[in-house]
Length: 116
Image 1 (tube, rainbow, N blue to C red):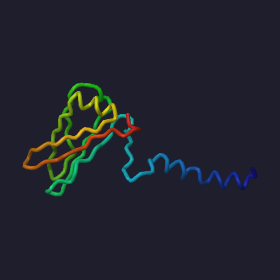
Image 2 (image 1 turned 90 degrees about the horizontal axis):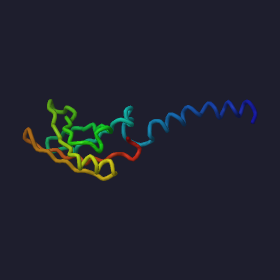
Image 3 (image 1 turned 180 degrees about the horizontal axis):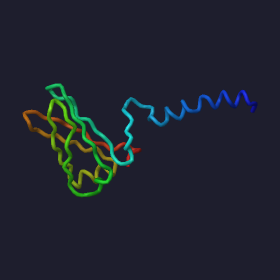
Image 4 (image 1 turned 135 degrees about the vertical axis):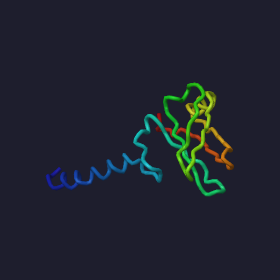
């Protein structure tokens, strides 16, 4: 390979590495993907949603109560049982619906195959 060809190919390498590092999908990059992952709730009838951050260290453990992100000046508490955490670890989806503060939210928890 000639020097000019080497330099031309090398100049495009950082762009390729950047695209791979970002995951190449429509979701936001998760800097802590090896220690946690996030799941968004559906947008409810009042037009807002919350997300939950599931910690990888919790998978396979005992019941955990998570606090959702804040939206419309409130949060929600969602309990994920030990059995549900085991199911997540096995790659199975877990659906959680909570009703409090006058409205409901549903999360379909699913551990991405590249997480944890």
